[in-house]
Amino acid sequence: MKIILHYCSNVLPAILLLGAIGATIRLQAQFAPPAGMPGTTAIAADSAVFVDWASTCSFLAGWMDISNESLGVVTYGTPENGTAKADDLVLSLGDGGVATCLFTTPLADGPGWDFAVFENSFDDTFLELAFVEVSSDGDNFVRFPASSLTQTETQVLTFGILDATQLNNLAGKYRGRYGVPFDLNELSGESGLDISHIVAIRLVDVVGSITPLWQSFDQEGRIINDPWPTPFETGGFDLDAVGVIHNQNNTGILQVDAQNNLLIYPNPIEDILYFQSERPVVRLSVFSSHGVTVFRSENQQQLTISTEDWPVGIYVARLVIGNRILTSTLVKLK
Image 1 (cartoon, rainbow, N blue to C red):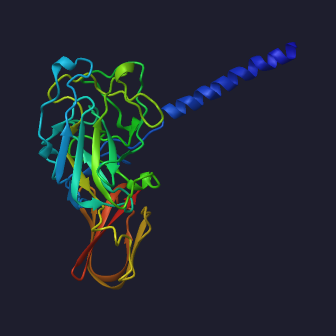
Image 2 (image 1 turned 90 degrees about the vertical axis):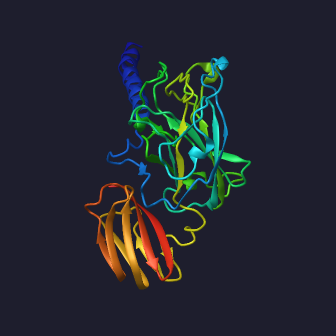
Image 3 (image 1 turned 45 degrees about the vertical axis):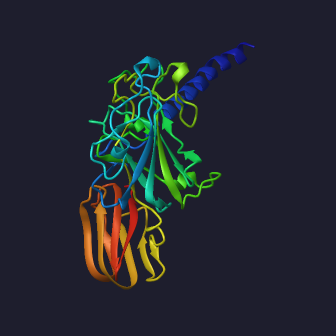
């Protein structure tokens, strides 16, 4: 018995320690960092990847403070502020407010990111969040699975800070003029959703309270803690714009153009990017997510492009073939 007890007294602490380490690792799991940092997924508003922007927006105002409804609802901005290119003219949603954006051409799943949502945060740490949902018919919406690893022991107060690396699939995790991108392929197989025909994108303000009556939750049931209360006319998530990367006009031909046997590979990019086409391409240009031209060539059928010096991030290849312009989104991970 003493031997068994001695064994247990040595082994059990080790088991508990391993469990604690595992829990710590899970809690410290990191997502993409703020705009401008290595590994970020933030896309600048001026990036050439965008082919369209929301054309109309409808709005259901949320409360200035859901715990004190006598203050009324938010009043800052108009629905039109959520349309067109990101410009820092915003629509404040308030606690639990909802904005629904429509587009002239339905969005469609392409390689990599398909659209991005812009907020107006003035820095990388004061972040007001929103859930993102999409619909193929304008009535039935499916929410992107969001994650928040922010601590939930103490409330993030009105002007408190958040860490972008603890947030995923939540609009608002990047500062103003930098969009949070979303990949429709993540919702592949969802009932009632056709990811090749998205007509509406809906933003739902995250009520960041950790008080049970007003909590919001991520995909795994964790409370989402963000700055709260924000009892102002500008309270809650501030919608600036929704930028389209892939829609039904540019996803028929992506990395492979059957008409010209055109290939761009590999994607994700490694140190070399290969391009080949059955006939010369008038112009091939590759842009960074900041809109900077990193490569340009004319009248070529085959190229081997060194990408060793390209920073990690998102790129768009734009090809002019005859009277057509084709685009393909590329990603460099390392």
